[in-house]
Amino acid sequence: MTSEIVGILVFLVILGCSANRSPHKSEKQRMDTNQQNICVVAISKLDPNLLEKLRVGLEKIFEQNLEVSQSPLDLEFAYDPKREQYYSSAILEKLTERRFGACERILGIVDVDLYVPDLNFVFGEADVVDNTAVISTKRLRPAYYGLPEDEKLFWERTLKEAVHELGHTYGLPHCPDSKCVMHFSNSLRDTDIKSSSFCQSCKKKFMSVIRLEG
Image 1 (cartoon, rainbow, N blue to C red):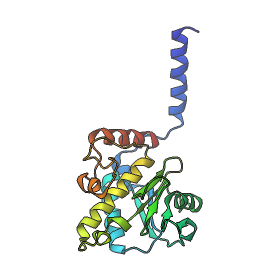
Image 2 (image 1 turned 135 degrees about the vertical axis):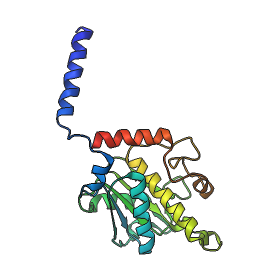
Image 3 (image 1 turned 180 degrees about the vertical axis):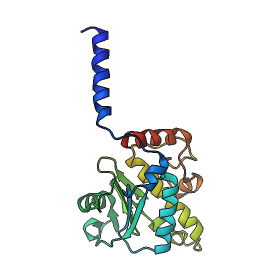
């Protein structure tokens, strides 16, 4: 088969795929639509003020509608008595099973200590196939380390971890830029150093996904 024929066939495939897509939406159009693209679900009882601040912060960063709700869940199914921690992957599976409404992405928030095998703990985890993520606020509180409470610092850490895990559901990998929100946090110090925003490179990748999904 000649290169000219191959090129024509590729063009026709792309054209056919494009014909099935709805026109790309602008950022404002996505914010104006009633579709809830991201659902934030507190599956541990959390301060409503924290959830509202989180909603505002995430909507500003992702430029999409968010639905925030409290839906407490008995997490005993994920508890490991030997580690005295909760298996985050099991919680992700439960979130996938429940599927809250017509949300494209789900972020669960818990206030228990999370782990995955081979790691002492995790701040959160994401499933890039089912577009679900979970974060824990447990180790984000200064009081966990015997320090005075700092609500501003706690809020900033929570927002960063939420953006980070949701970023994975858009296919964003870990970023080498220590200031980028997609940088891997090996410790809380890493979380405090990075910002709550995407670096230029990750922002470009994120916008590419948004355009494809729009």
